[in-house]
Length: 475
Image 1 (cartoon, helix red, strand yellow):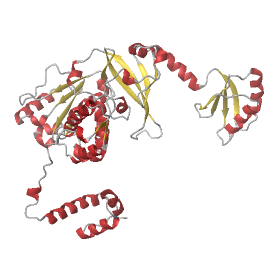
Image 2 (spheres, one colour; image 1 turned 90 degrees about the vertical axis):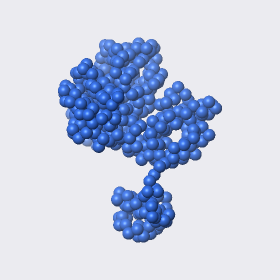
Image 3 (cartoon, helix red, strand yellow; image 1 turned 90 degrees about the horizontal axis):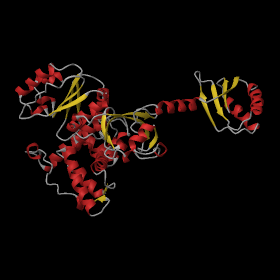
Image 4 (cartoon, one colour; image 1 turned 180 degrees about the vertical axis):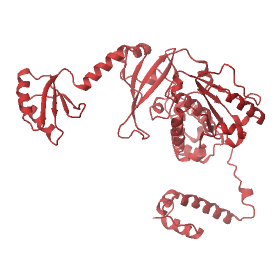
């Protein structure tokens, strides 16, 4: 039996209501607070008899603040559950929900058929079992990953996947703010553009890269041209593809990727309609080719959004740069994110060796990786880790050791000789030290925060600031 109690919102009223059920020795198995006005208490007592209910009803109405007591068929959460279950049974497309670890919590019959298992066996299964190339942990980590029109294959069938995150209400914008996600798979023919785009991967929103990821998410739903700038290997192509799949247009519109050939970039005549047009490496085009491209872009329909990548906006002709002047994202190079290098390497190892056992890195290995500047950024780090992981797996190891690493022949090339001409070693070191402290002081750090950042004593920091004539931070 289920009971609805309409009552005032006062301190202690729920305790008095439950005390009455206890006096009559009635076991309440579940309950819920709510109602349209927030003045309802719903209780489920399966073993309560009709005669017991009549006695309890009289006692409840004597409680100050209780206005009405009545029997109901279902409490609201049960009604929502049965209604949703009925709706999902009639949905032809696979629909399922997963937790943060990628375990399936619930699914409809279409999802069970797509996975090739019975409906009662779906809950508890790992989504990675059916989508082995998808990085489920990163996908569910937060919002900065492709969400719309993601091309996937399940048991040889082509689908477009959309997922809606389930945020934790207390911290909807936090980094680890998802309780899970709801995924929908729509059958489709595998699009030709899917094979042309970079492989869809998580964006690894660690350290300074997180700001770029959140910026990408904010701009995904807009329609203006966007420029993604950065050094070679920082992930410009990956971000451009992710932007398309983060935008709602991915569910229906196509994405076209164009690369310069022989210094030219021709937009094919069939590129029309809603969608995204990715223009790679515009800095490789000559001035004449850039102006020719600009004339083509001006003739495109407004619902087709151009996304350009280049090393820097300064490498573009002024007229073409003006087209992409409204919205831009600059991706940080890997050498500026050394504190997060361990997270990048572990995520990259999981992505590049999905079929192998999880690998770790020794402290000595990580120290060597942190000291390198990685001129090719993530491209260079990825190839380096794949080679090291191959050696580690060949010897049946589970931790990448120093002996597994290929030789790093490329050394940092910094302008020490030109910059330091006419200076002694001591003078050069003092100028470097003053520049470092000046940058840190500009961040408004206290002397104690500076000492902790640099790993030296508070007194040593104060003496150096006094020596170099730098303003002493507050604190």
